[in-house]
Image (cartoon, rainbow, N blue to C red; front, side, top):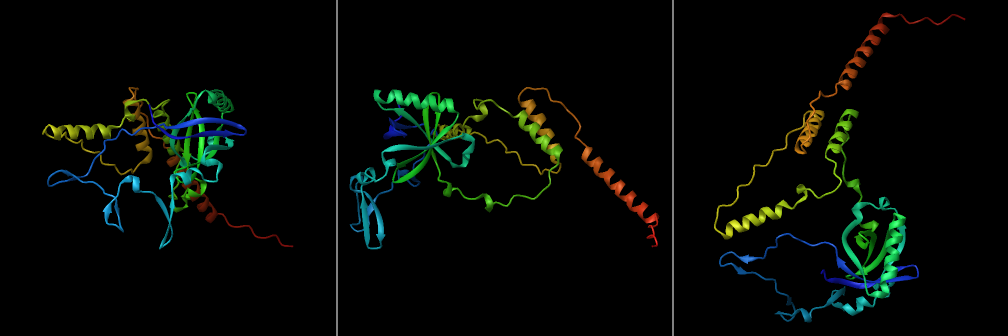
Length: 302
């Protein structure tokens, strides 16, 4: 069972739902330690007091704020728990908004909110059903780890999920990115849409969404442990320079269909735009030639 990372309550108007918070995700990546390569002795980081020049235990360590160079203000965990904020002890729902109104770039890690005791059962279920029926998400404020945060509450399998969010002023403007000023034809857009449709999925349960990096790393560790030859790394495909975007899109569609066991339909690339350009150029040249041959009209005399 996941450990509880925070205890408090959800505040929904005058309704209070006692909850405890559990992490909704877990890390399956392989963890490394640091070793001295000469003798493979473990290298550890020691916490040393600069004034006493000695290693200190975790129980001797606390938080402090450097108010001035020669003045440190000590802040204890008890001080943080007693912050003069309603969000220090509860998740305060501020508004309900459509999910699509929230920019995904704001959304961070997720947590499951579990009802804390029988007294929380009914108001918890009430919030679950109300959120589900409204098709909206709740935006709330809460204070953890020495700072107030913005959060998003939604429902997943009848469980309330809290997503940490960035404050709007923490999101950098995309203005720093200089998008290319290139013209894209309608045929190329339709080709990209066709590729997207071929790659469309209803879920993310396929083998292509498996962590192959961790599997490959585990094979290397096992080979070295058994003193075997390391598995041969596949030759990476070199990205080809796209000279004909439409041809690349068409080939990508056929390749995606083939990978899904669908019959590949070979068809010619659209040439309408090129033909239209040539026809327009011919018409323009003809008009210019005609204009040179036709004498201009003289103005009528009064």
